[in-house]
View 1 (cartoon, rainbow, N blue to C red):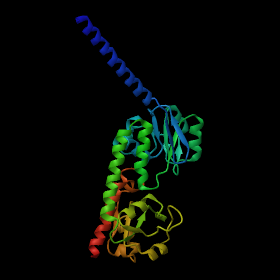
View 2 (view 1 turned 90 degrees about the horizontal axis):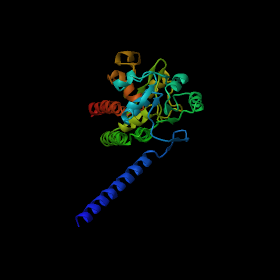
View 3 (view 1 turned 180 degrees about the vertical axis):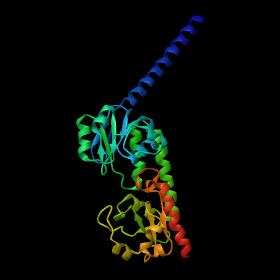
View 4 (view 1 turned 45 degrees about the vertical axis):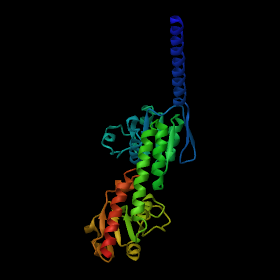
Length: 300
């Protein structure tokens, strides 16, 4: 009888050990499954395993990678990648408009994250000729931020962190939308550069920010994404509020015929908070919404 229980116990141990081994094998198989995804060119990228060495070719992409939990895997970033702090210590591989192909190849990345409208298509083509996998992104809407966080998380094997970041972004965006988007429209001019004077049209992501705040983009109907504006055109538009990342009120005195200047409604917002397509854009959006709401309250 004692021998029977001994053999039964030993058989049971073997049985559960076999089950555990099978589970581990299945987990390993799942982890090793190829990762396939279409980028914003419509091109399908396939990785045999989650990327371990990643290069980011724009400061906004560097921020997205960190937010998606993949910051520790970055081995190269573009110039001006200064957020978060640890990004400053990563090797530079060119800027947003020119990639140092040889340096990137020497880093032996298994994934390069590129910006469609910022990086040259020729540079992307050269990287792919080297056999380097390139995932090209083009965030145009605020909702694209959450989408790309999830995409990077999947490619880097950090989906849990990426999902947390994406969900947090969506909740913050919803909060701002509920609070501000249906309030009295306020006409806003957003200055992206001062010489020449430039703004954004309604298709730009900053246009999304202005809509989120319940404001009206003074040049939403412009045909190009970042139009140059004449002094006459700005005077004709006569915005109620001016938001700028470069000029403060004293720099606008030559436009004292504008109601926004006369009423001291020229506000400064750090440009990287609005002009980088990263989760921090909602920090900039919150500032814009507060400034616009301040004007609404003053006019009541």
